[in-house]
Image: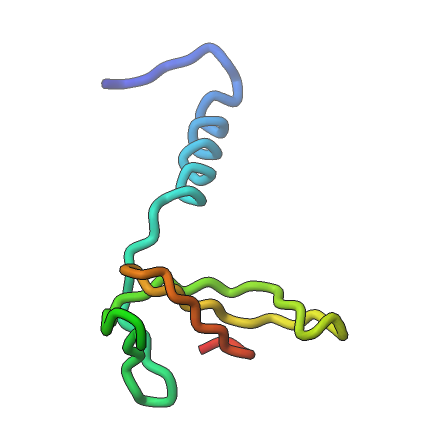
Length: 84
């Protein structure tokens, strides 16, 4: 189907909508290695995780970037003080 529009910015709006929808695309779980060792969940023994970089509050003293790794099965959360 060939979409034609009389609106001058129709192509730009369509491209912007496509890019913004990718922000909400479901992330696929992945294996994670920390210092050469594969991460295994201590609760359910799963090896697939979701990884997010977050701005953490370390005891209320200062904010710093950290990495949260969440088990895709039981949702156990690992916190790392830096990017892994």
